[in-house]
Amino acid sequence: MRLLLKNGHLVDPIGKKDGLYDILIEDDKVVKVQTRISDRVDKLIDASDCLVMPGLIDMHTHVREPGYTEKETFVTAGRAAVKGGFTTICAAPDTKPVIDTSFLVGDIRRQAENESLANVLPVGALSTGLKGKQGADLEGMAREGAVAFSDETHSLVDMYLLRQLFLRCARLGLPVFSWNEDRRLSGKGVMNAGKFSKSMGLAGIPGSAEETVQARYMLLAEECGCQLHLQHMSTRKSVLMLWLAKKQFEAVTGEVCPHHLFLTEECLMEKGAAGKVYPPLRTEEDRLALIDGLRDGIIDVIATDHSPHEAGKWTLEEAPSGFSGLETALPLVYTGLVKQGLLSASQMVEKMSSNPARILKINRGSLNPGDIADITVFDPRPEYDISTEGFASLGKNTPFEGYHVSGRVTTTLVSGRVVYRNN
Image 1 (cartoon, one colour):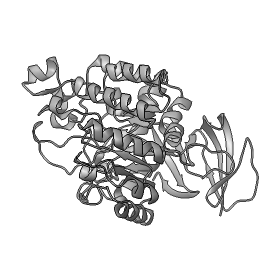
Image 2 (image 1 turned 135 degrees about the vertical axis):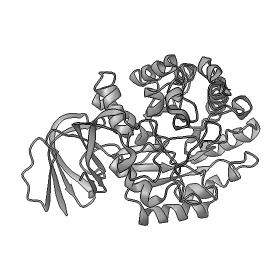
Image 3 (image 1 turned 180 degrees about the vertical axis):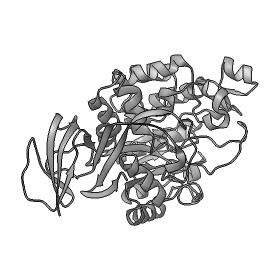
Image 4 (image 1 turned 90 degrees about the vertical axis):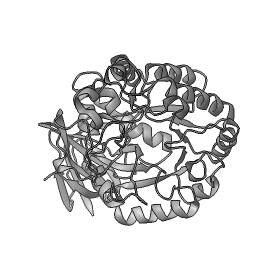
């Protein structure tokens, strides 16, 4: 099968291309990237006026399967991913049962290959059952295809155990994704601790609940030579600490989510339970610091923390935490950062494709000849209001309902195969 993608504006930071190019694909690989290609092909896709980029990679996706299929499945997560331009997603281990054995990693990988339109990369649990009592079978999970290990939703308190786990991860050459929450500090908090939590009479979560764990993890990771990736950073001090750590320790990276870039704690006064997430939406000062961290290269990745939940009428105290994010991330980032001149299109692709590929050490994130043809085609012209009515995800939970954005994914290719076309 030979496919030609013509007339698109290719944005490929690794391939150092930012301009009009044609891309010839044969089976699952890129064959040619030139300003004009006239080869005979089986299929032609016109990408005029669109941005063409290496397929997006989400390093932080709660697929929910096994165990919570009322919230999401491999099928629905894959559909949501490719509709949002994501060709690869990293499946978090907080499922039921927890992904903490080689058998579960292998089973998930095989099931996802059969059922998901997107590539699904399993992330194994650092500790058995994510309980922080004993280390999980990291070596067995690595053999079965785990790309990283995480303490998802349960930051480890036992620093001796964490040190042993970091040493094992360093020997395996795989990164640790750190959750960064001290539950003794966050307590029963439901939003950022500050004037708004006080005025609403709600328990608050201080920034120190995130920052103290982040500091401990970075110190231990440097000592152990373990690659560390900080998930969903949300505070100004977290950005400052990452900047300081990078001066001493190259193998530490960080991510931020669109909701922390574009919303603040005030959102909860309007949205109520629809604005509940962990870490919570913070202050305007924190939000601006996160954007500065992205622009300056301190924060490496934009991830969704896709957290679908079933519909329900919740109070803030009762509501589950998190948003469905795979289908909104790219238009939000393009509208809020690229159109505003805060990031270039090339920087956007770095944060959402090439940097994740580098951190995960996978053969993705670029479109040079010989590379896997995972491709996202994005038309920046359409303007519309976000609506959950057309979501492919089972999770309709988002604070961005009605949010005005520009741009829509028109075509997504995974391994050279068209898996999504708009309309």
